[in-house]
Image 1: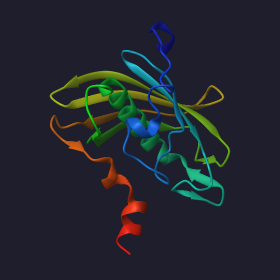
Image 2 (image 1 turned 180 degrees about the vertical axis):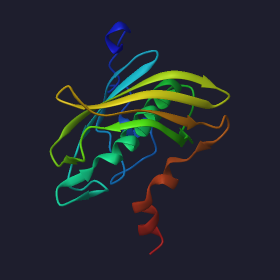
Image 3 (image 1 turned 45 degrees about the vertical axis):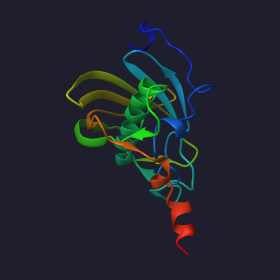
Image 4 (image 1 turned 60 degrees about the vertical axis):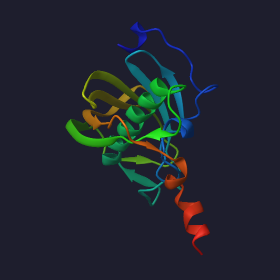
Length: 167
C-alpha cells in the first residue's frame, strides 16, 4: 500500500518537533521517513530516557501512542506552510488493536506506518502498523479529532521551560 503512492522525503523541511507539539520524554518519534498523499512512515528508536521505559523495557501498549503521534505528524505535514504553530488533535478511539509482543526493548528501532482512511468534519481514521525489522508487532485503527480553529503556541507544550520559569 505505501509503495504504490508517490513518496517525498520530509526531514529536510519538516523536523518532527515542527510537526507535533510533543516534547521529550513523551515525544516518541525520531523522524519522518516518508509521507505521501494518504500515509506517513515514522521511525521510533526506543531509548532509556523515554516515558514508560522501566528496566530497559516499554510495554507494547504504548504502540497506540506511536500511532497517534504518527497521525499527528501526518496532519502537521499536510498543514505545513498553511498554519503557524500546532493545531490541537485528540486521540478519541483505538480499534482492533493487535499486539504481537508484550514489550519493546531499549535499542529497538521501530517503523510506524499510518495510512489515512478518511476525514469528515474534523474526525479522521487511520490504519496503523508498528514493525521491527519488517515483523509486525502492533496493528490497529485509531480515530482522531482535530477542531477547525484551535491553533496553539508551542511554548505551552514545553513543560521544562515553564517549570524552570516558575521557580
